Length: 194
Image (cartoon, rainbow, N blue to C red; front, side):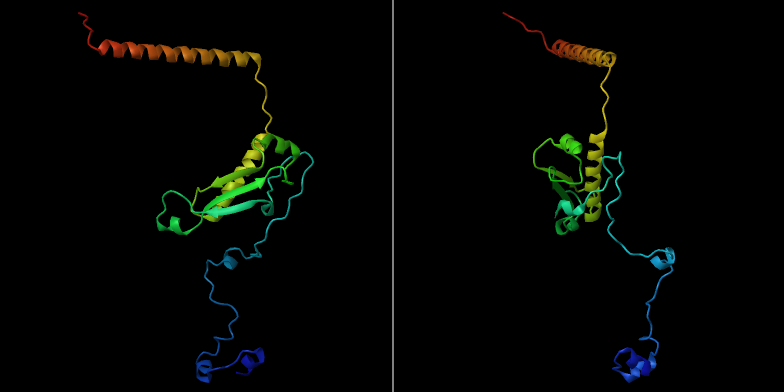
């Protein structure tokens, strides 16, 4: 009892304390064999936000998207999901102003700027807010990386080959259409003119 008072823990019920003397002295609660400390013994288990990765000289986009510069809204998702869909805001809308985005280079901004103002990415792929947010961020990354890919101009031979292929496909389509029309006309009864 003296150790409890010295720790600053009041002893309310002398009978309860005498029956379970080790109950209040315990510093750690029950831990399963599958607890994180047992599964990952050398891990600090501290979750932190990642800092900005170092930029390499030749790399135009590192994949880092600062969350504080995004306008993230959650809303109710559509589709199947039962009553949970009507209660939980799992759909994610991520928008950001393209011209004021400091984390994108001017070249990327120029290629992404189809419309003036905000770029909007939406996701209601899963029933989890965090997974939908991760999906939106991945959509942003993939669209930025896609605009960085340099498309090679097709050679004149390739352009001619594509043109001939399209012309042949159009002729084939018109031939099939004409044959189908003739077949339908042949099925009709002959017209008798008096």
